[in-house]
Length: 524
Image 1: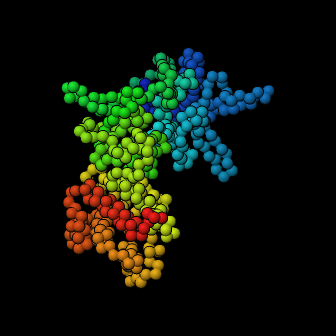
Image 2: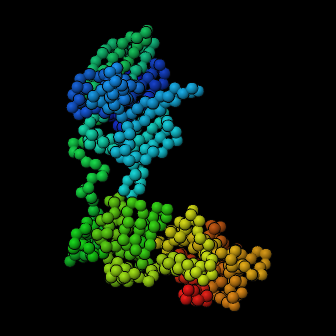
């Protein structure tokens, strides 16, 4: 043991930091290593008016394990807490079970309920509590481990400010040595160190033939100077977005707060702004007119391939974090930029547009309508319904927003899974003469031939799409694979991923239109 360690200099540094590190405060910590090296940090709450009283000496407001649980006195008087104005924040729980005892800590239920904290637990000794913010993100607030409990400071400060209380961190550190080197020149002393927000006693003395270095005291975490809450109204933030140009050609930025003069002002964004939402289909849904989730919704015009127009004031309904996401994709308005005719009819004129304008949205619209029409006429689904775990494939399907191979591969795989892989082979093959190895596309082709229909162009597309998909699944466009090479040539695929994806969506729509016409589904 070194001299500085024996003198508890490391613990003094922690006290001076108020047990705060990187936005977290220790509420409990057991650093005991042996009988000669022990340490305990614990905590409680006190009313503001008691701060002066408890600042006068270094003793704790309570004893560990007796921190103020409900008590019944001899005259049958009931009290929730042992001392008036002193309130436990952590509860030590101990259960003397027959086979083995169990101990753990609970956090003040009032604190947990105030922030509506969500608990995730491995067991009682290892738990975390999270605050769910306005966009559904989980923010750690409490971390409980067997020998430590940490609280995120900003949440604690809000809580004690609203409660008009101080958070008191109590500490007790002790180190013992049988022999101390003479060159250390350690003297006995007993002194009290008091600052504005802490007080502790530090003494060095002989105890049972050993030299003892002992610190005991408490520090106070004060409330914020101003009261505020995480659910305050009237403190909304509004980011600024580009709405035009001034007389000098500089971009004009206006905030997205809702005022009358801004209601029909447009601002524009790169299509990549939507990737975040497409990539989390279990959380978000995107269609031609908006983005939707449990936490917010936003009206957008998603009927244009090159950009996304949004009425400025609509962005004001987003949580500020979400506004910042949109800010980074904001672009200047250019000639002929505007909203789509579909969006205008629906959102301005109040007329329901017949169908979306972009190939991906139109395909999704047509896919659902075709399957309904087919079922009405034949009594079975042409495309088998997706399972619940695969529903995201349809939700996330979209025209790639950037010309990169990863996005292209994901969307091609999805459209094949929705079409070729979902063909209702069980119904299609009824009454057909099949060969061994006949699968979805061949079964569909024989089904059409059985109904006196030959559509070679459609099947050329479907087979090349299937071959392209196989190449993607193998993570290579191999020239040694004859079918894959043929598919690459058919789609003229090079680095033109958006263009080819668009072609696939359009030809998939043609497939549905062709079948709809051949089987007279529109009449149903």
